[in-house]
Image 1 (spheres, rainbow, N blue to C red):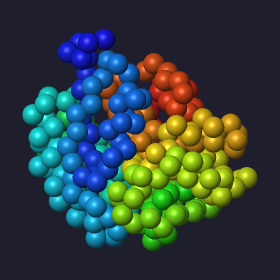
Image 2 (cartoon, rainbow, N blue to C red):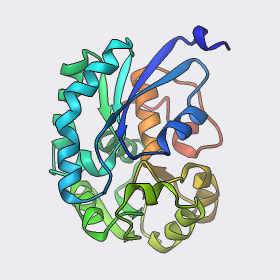
Image 3 (spheres, rainbow, N blue to C red):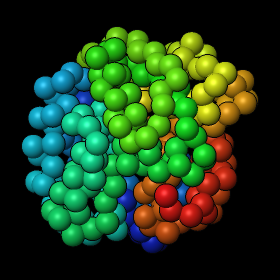
Image 4 (tube, one colour):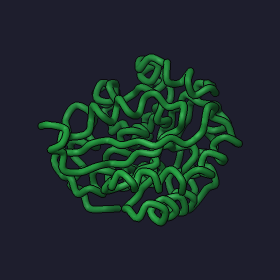
Length: 245
């Protein structure tokens, strides 16, 4: 398919230091959907930065609307869960108002994915600090799920996260998983993990979700794309046609 024959446009809001989402999204998205990005300032994954990043939300979402995108996605788990229950929905509303387009966030997508795969207990793994990981765990539990176990690598600089090998995700996944966890969630959109999802699923025998995977899944559902995508885990292969949570 030629680039000018693509039928839909996805607008992606991502942290300014993110070097992973554009290549991962471009590899996974079907040929009929083109990717268009705008950047929100963030260089470190710390408490202050994950709050300040959304100060630019309306400005950058409005610029994506200039490209006449069909939907807008903020694919960042830590910033969209930072202030607890309902914060993801608040940000989603701000994006939709500023862009005039349907919108979602990584944290909203995460919760919807937990629901459609029937998860109650979550194993959580991430490359960032234990403090940030606990904030995400608190958000998950505030929304009615249990965090069975969690592991964090302690990497603070987002550029350093983007340079981690995907095998770091495989290794941390095995540390974080517990027998009573229904799913494993690999958090952080700048972590190269999607190429490891099927391998981890085969090893653990349960669904494995990632920030970018659930974000792509939710965006495709907003765009009413329902064809299975193979090679990126059960969520994209089996649950694109699932009823909305």
